[in-house]
Image (cartoon, rainbow, N blue to C red; front, side, top):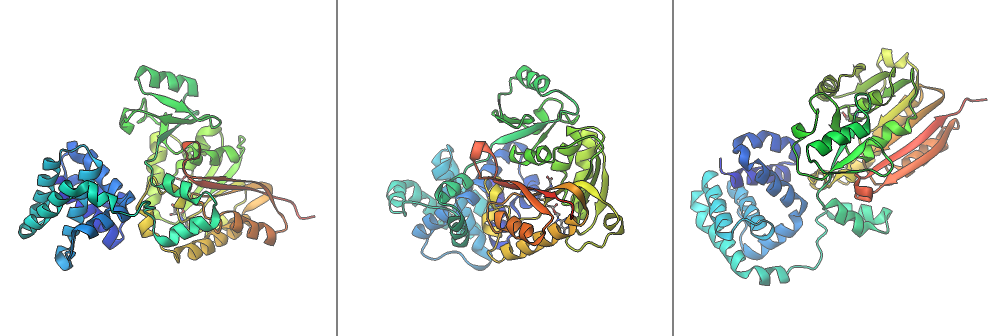
Length: 419
Ligand SMILES: C[S@@+](CC[C@H](N)C(=O)[O-])C[C@H]1O[C@@H](n2cnc3c(N)ncnc32)[C@H](O)[C@@H]1O
């Protein structure tokens, strides 16, 4: 199928049907030639990152927006505008392929309409762009306000959210020394940077496929942002620790825990059975194992869990994911303001429940990939104020783009024995 038509469908599904970009791309990717997959992704991610801007450009060019069944044609036009302004595709090719997209979507009668708009943009581009407002945040107003409320440098955070994310991997030190793996990258002429303090975190600078990373299929490395690699480090793991990862799927941090130190007794819990399959797939590639339980830790009624005690707990709770917008730009448009209080409520229920499973002198790591204080600092302050045996050891808020990492929050809380 025409790649521009598929890109229009992808963006239509995200913006109109509020579907996840990753899921929609997985479904639609099969419709394009493998050689066009890169272009499909570039247009889809790019347009979702810059949606407000191209929506306004289109408004300047279209007097009557296509409605009803033909609404998809508005998205075809956005795809055309994006190519004309952001890619090196020659204008004539961008226009003719986009016009063909209208035909391929069975709107041949609107071909001339699409053609006229795109040709006008290519002719009057400078004039049209100079008439646009000077700054586009490309975030919904409520989210800009929420970030503004919490941070003085909110504009920098928003700009970073709109950047493309870097490619981080985690070296599996259970299988290979970091330096030996870096030698393998050198041999393959893959360029990299080391994180200044997280020794397993390596930033890959070439555009390589995951399968081209040395010994990836044998579990010698995994794709994981450097910020996410702090979780296992903060747990201060020792052999024979009994660790609970209570929101574990797809198992990235769990796998890191098992790779870090041998003889860890790990229990992984998640309430989503489909995502539990992902934990098992990840573990099988890496060659690690744990006790995996499908259970709801917000309403703890699993007997095995209720009767267990752990000396380390990782609560990587469900969150707004506002810290990982550069990786998942659709979050900006799918997340709603009213989701935040609901998430905060669930996070607190999870914290309270797993606290009862932690031994005295045990360590709880609370983490989110959010930057909103309601989900992070304020949440932890409330928890510590209510639980006299909770001692807050440390909090870390990483902002998106800081040392090229995703936005992440960690709180390290110790359970003091009650005297
Ligand atoms: C941020 S993700 C965890 C990512 C994971 N720690 C990793 O590093 O790969 C949060 C997870 O919590 C799970 N979850 C959400 N609500 C839950 C609940 N009430 N009980 C257990 N798991 C829950 C979700 O299914 C999701 O997999």
